[in-house]
Image 1 (cartoon, rainbow, N blue to C red):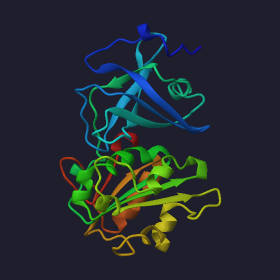
Image 2: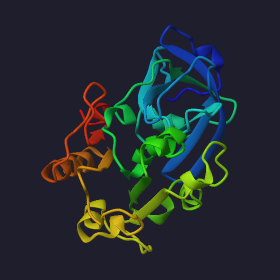
Image 3: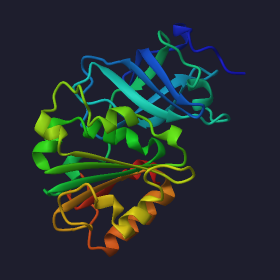
Image 4: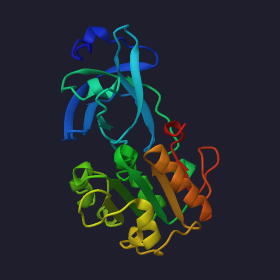
Length: 271
């Protein structure tokens, strides 16, 4: 039986974990939701990193999972995007969380979906499926990213139109963002695609790469250019492995924090 989330006495701060408060919950559909929480003054992260969040178990120990931070690094709150797995140990409970509830937050963000792991380039492609969009929501609102690249392109592939989280914000080219200049927002490109319903763009990301639709809004080459293009991948394990293999076949080299390359994946989520 699941314990109620609202009992703050069940939570214990530690050297690794702080106890934060939920400030907002938004359900995009019956399977997808985002939540915001308070942010400790000492919490710093690089755009694209992930951190552990969670709830206490019946034995008192924290049940934690890795979540990419979806909010920009300057935001006073921290935002995360999650699917709902009905029999999932954490999300089966997390889906019921409400404003004012406590939640665990890890103190050490980390990850490889960061610009430090990429060589300089002209275009940054962020290819995502499902909740893999989350780290790119942070990166796309980071002014430093626009100083590094001439175009910043988010590609989001989902099964249903309703799964296009943050669609309105992305279609507006991040309108209202307090730090992005107008010329930076004009260089942002959003390519949503749906695989199982009718939509203006349909098909898997690989199909869009192969037939050129992925590049239609770009002012650059209508194909991948390993010399000047940089790519980030975030999604299912199968998606990441397939696209990594495709990119390597096109002459891209995987990067890491200690050895920048032309594309990066989040190793922690791949295994």
